[in-house]
Figure 1 (cartoon, rainbow, N blue to C red):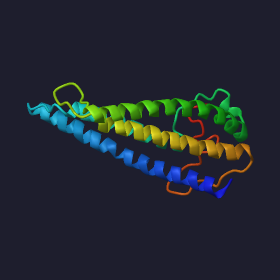
Figure 2: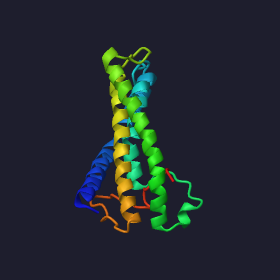
Figure 3: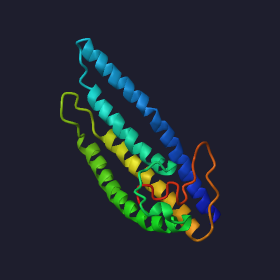
Figure 4: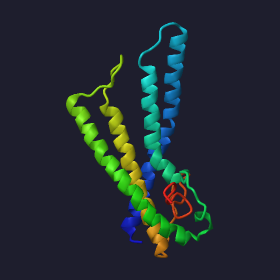
Length: 190
């Protein structure tokens, strides 16, 4: 594969690896918010913001961690036939199924961007007592979808290289696994 393709794939994998590792620490922040809420309730002074903030943090963890899960191959796959195929056949099937997921995420990204821009324009707030602004949550959602799209393009390029018989070098870095067929390629897609 051309050097720029390998460089692109590595850059995307490095970016998603970094965001994925960062997202892991949101669990600790989530636990702190929930602990604070529980202690405040037990002390007779319940906080109105803790439940919603916990929901927002969980959504951020889930959305930002999605690309990392794809990269690490931890997405769920139903492989009744898939596990029996050769790596090259898996890559060929993943090339087709990834396109369906890319289309779905592209539509989601378009809607997410429009919703975020609307939220900023009108100063949208969530209903309830706390009434937090919604644009930060929607912006995190857009970022997560964008990271997943980037990761899928990297997986697509790795699978294309495998189908063409020109395997890319395995990713460099701490703990990053090979995304070629049998790894994360099409994880949950195929």
